[in-house]
Image 1 (cartoon, rainbow, N blue to C red):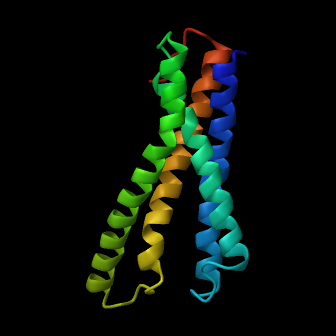
Image 2 (image 1 turned 180 degrees about the horizontal axis):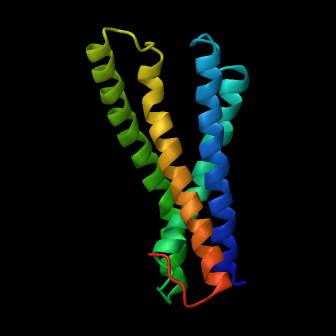
Length: 151
């Protein structure tokens, strides 16, 4: 296995771990009815998820430049990918906040207020978890039969 594929596999696993950690963070917050948001288990899952997703995002840069023969371009894409993760996180925060705020308006405040800050995290967790699974499934399929292409 080439170094590129090996790192893409490591990054895919990191994305899955990060996505699951953020889902667990939200689970802790819901289980404590918003009393534990950034400390204890919720804080640990937040940190584990953030750093795993940051590292894992490099695999997306490698995957998107897999046909590029120039290693400098692939390295630049991998190093620049965490910027895409951070930008996507802020976009997901805005979208999540808007969705939860609209849900609170429609439901008459039936949704807990702590979800306003957590909507973006759950969107980011799901999106990056799916990207991690896409990276891993794509590698597994190409390893099983090189003619198979996951686009």
